[in-house]
Amino acid sequence: MTDYAWHIPDPVTQPEFYADVPVKRLIAWVVDTIIVAVICLLILPFTAFTGIFFFPLMMLVVGFIYRVLTIAGGSATWGMRLVAIEFRTQTGRPFEFGMAFLHTLGFSISCAVFLIQIASMVLMIATPRAQGVTDHLLGTVAINKRAHT
Image 1 (cartoon, rainbow, N blue to C red):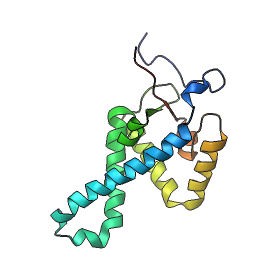
Image 2 (cartoon, helix red, strand yellow):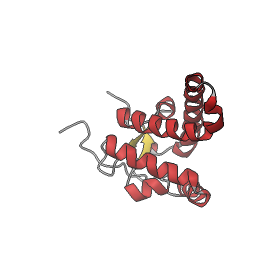
Image 3 (cartoon, one colour):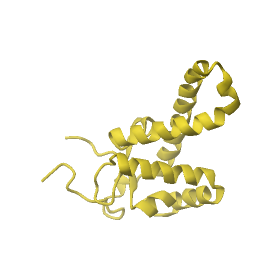
Image 4 (cartoon, helix red, strand yellow):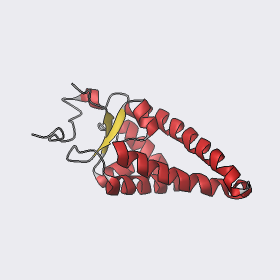
């Protein structure tokens, strides 16, 4: 049996996997936004400061790349790792590059369309697995990280 031979935890019998996940996701989002902003500020001098004129676009592109690479590399962004949550597929496996890309694309679309973002927040608070719109579409969850024994 492999380390990942389990499925998504049941919120009724294993509620500890979903405890405080919506709050942790919010904290992780704030931390990740700060990290992306710092990276963009570090890039700014290399654009001869013309990046100021397209800074929001730079934030979008850098943020997308940051999220895809960090999620593909550990099934969580650095902010998510800080608060000890991680993404899992419907089979319980950590994200690989393709799923990280799709989830980041869905996240980006959710951020761009206000009503989808509101729906995601409501779903994260109201559903037993604290899943947003993208999570529901992809069959993924954010869970509290398992302790390694």
